[in-house]
Image (cartoon, rainbow, N blue to C red):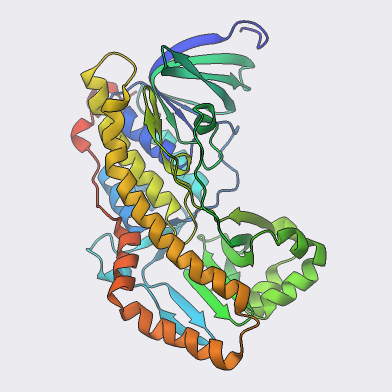
Length: 424
């Protein structure tokens, strides 16, 4: 085995995917099933780490079915969500009704990501043309003649430096993407006035699969994640988390208790908490010669509307058909012109989702900044009126349907699958 201080180990593949999140794992499975030599690189040694996205919209359920993995997905620990409710000042309001969507994909899923990612990797690993390399940190892109032709990485499990040559590098490595940075691209983040403080709880702390609670003292989101755990989220003004911690956990628990005493009793320390920055972003370009970015590496998602997982999975589905077609058209590193279809399909859809997310975020920001100080006689009827009237408004119904189904429904290119020729 070569020493990491010597010459790197060099090997080749058709597609090198960096990042084993939902987008990277879905694309890996689809390409593997289509007979494409694919290597998936993940910097973490295992998948048992903290992911921020737990909700999979009905569009993801449909795409899982088209991929042929939905039955397996549904064996994982999960909650199915059809009519999530919001409680505002003591009254419950049904704000979304997925049962109105085409059956059988008329529900969303709440679940932890690691079991799903392991499932997708295991399914991809059924094909000889796929390889998963965990504990492998990508440090840079390899370029020749202005084109990306691979990545440089360190495989910590094998204690070796690696130069992985490829016809395409896919950056699916999240909002802090190393691939995007190595390509000299900016994340294009928009400013936001709020952040979301997540904390995990025992599953019996939450009694409804998905819900939010609004009181004058704040906004609390909470939902179940199956049999073992629940997740709660508390909106805070941007940049105030250090002050929240400085004031202490007891003060924070009292603030939560003003909205839901039961949840507050289950919060024991800040060790249960993690901060999610809300700033969405839009990278200037997503493709170049030999390079494609998807998911948060291309467009950082806000948590508003539970869109992060769905956007990444849709990206992977469109990237799959684009890449397979491009690989068939040339034997060289894939040119940006061949990859442009991916961006031309996905960018308008993502821009529409980001516009809707930012509209919702502005409402949340105003409430976080002003809800506690506004007179009860003003804020209470205003919020109750909003949840009584808003779900019936055409633009609100269009918004949640866009979130649930995607702006432009897409389908998996199953015609590209060649399982009989490449299964192990």
